[in-house]
Length: 154
Image (cartoon, rainbow, N blue to C red; front, side, top):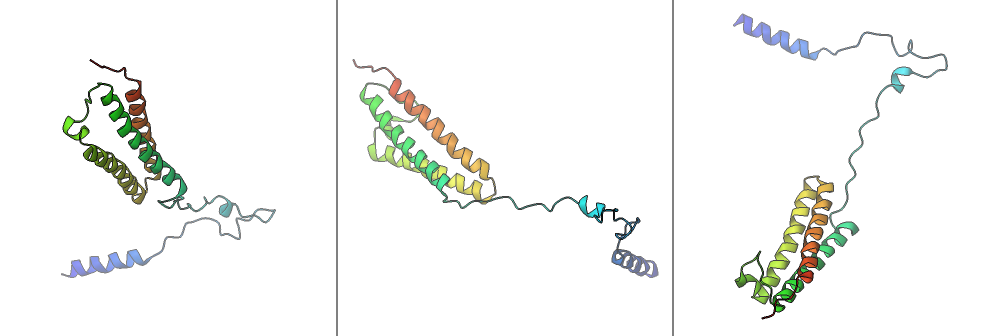
């Protein structure tokens, strides 16, 4: 019992002491021109990362771009179906149902906005923007491909 309380007392007194580096005092370290080299050698305090509002101009433009390319995807898919082509990525029950397909395109847009919001809230601001840019790029590529397919009329 005596050993345990002695260790506890020694541990508390050891943590209460402050560490003082050995070396010249700040008065001794002044240079002849009056500057202090120890103060000049300290690194600058870290700055907080710059953040932006989620609904800023850039995100609004990116989300508008996603909505436009998703609308173009709807139109380009309808166009190539009218030209006799077959959709291979989605089932016919979805693509042939006008309201269902439009709802799918709207859901894809809102999912992209939602993922961007999650990335924004977790501090991944660069990924937040690149996710939207990637969505626009992939959907835009699909739109161009749909319009460039040859017609297949029987």
